[in-house]
Image (cartoon, rainbow, N blue to C red; front, side, top):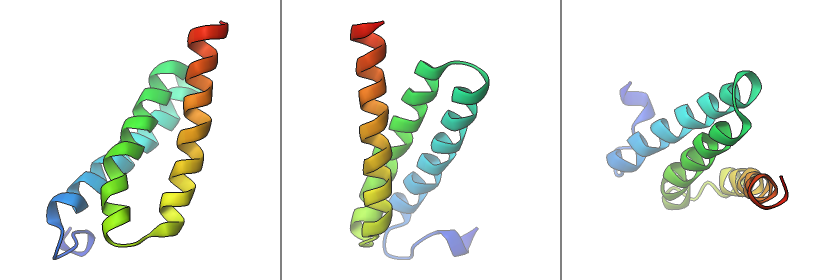
Length: 83
């Protein structure tokens, strides 16, 4: 487990792990249960893991997660306002 924790930013590393877990759980919830709850899980995972990616300058992950967040936000808008 120590290999996954960044020495300078341990709290942000734990947030990244929690964020990734929520991201994966959200994907499973979207597939098997509820789109809305799954999107909330994935957005929470994105928001929680962003600080770690920013701090360690993982711009590729920031770009990919931002792209997913934009798609999820547009889906939430569609669910709330046009459904």
